[in-house]
Length: 520
Ligand code: G6P
Image (cartoon, rainbow, N blue to C red; front, side, top):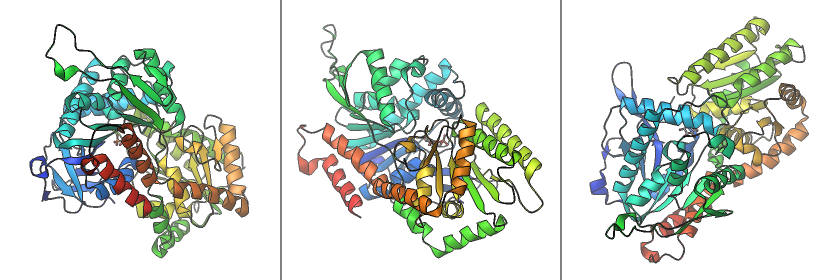
């Protein structure tokens, strides 16, 4: 299970830190505070692609990470964990309900994922979102050195860039949106659509997963605030101080050029390959296959239990193939890992019931005494076990109805150093822009998904290898270090011409660190 965070009790306070040149701000910290049934508590590495993506950069850059520890009402002093300076932000249980479960995950999440589930709009959730965003901005402002680089992450914190710029105009501010940015026709439903756009425009660079997300954002800017956009730039006019307030210096903002562009995120690819090459992981992969009765084909789905992932569509396609006799349960098993997520949000509770009902039905209808149709696991697993699963799986199924990137698709490719295995990938996942040699599907087209499953199962090894080789080249080259280096270089570029001396320039310092990481 999750690892214990090392050195979590070392003392670190903003006062004795002197301020950090590089600060990451995200809703979740890279460590979670976990309270066991016996009342004891530990810090554990929290799951999720974002953490995996930024941890190596943070360690190399000796930066600070501002975020929530994952438990309500608990106050923690800053500390150091595994070489990362952790600055916890406290959320009350009301705020967890209104800002996190409410506005972030029951308003923005469904809205930004093409309203697959209906978003709820509540004014008290919005008020809490504003309040909590201000708290994150204040915490980041307090630990940032003069001229520091602050990198704000994801949809939970879209107001932070503007709040930070107001408090600390000396900072260089980046924002990266890990989830899609919806087309204007959908985005315009949001009662607070203008405030969010203005909040994001506080950043110097706004990163998106796909080119389409960046253009959706630019269009929203044109429609809502009327600024001139010259792809990939947005011209934000300066604000004049009204004549009635001659001393109000704090509000004056010079005109700025904001870069809004796609920076597709990736994974720590070589570490997946390194794990996959370990004999004990390969032995575990064999053990998994043996445990499933050595079927000819193992298909695998790995997702947070989320309605955006198209798990139901995948199960429907698979169930129909079994019912029609195009697949035989003696020959094929589907392993579905569905890690628990946002379990107090109604739509997620309902989804779990639906998925588990379907899994039960398919197993009831088709499993034999010796072969199960679906091996279903409502757990998260450590990375070692995931890589063993990737190695054990002949076919990886990513059937998301909408997904910012989908790092699981990249993890599968990075792990398959043997060149075997077939990736079935939804065209609605950001990863499909890059992984063009996957079997791309429209998950709404159940017949198409069924045909792709059969094509994957029957694909000759030579073709598997040709496709996998091309995808591996891309995933190994465009890894998470490349991603952060590209984003930070863009941030650096956005400040060219500023009168900061190179020797004191946190951005130059940081880029150098990134270059070092890139060369390793
Ligand atoms: C997505 C989001 C992340 C989030 C993760 C897990 O990947 O982009 O910001 O941390 O899901 O969701 P949770 O609500 O548990 O943080």
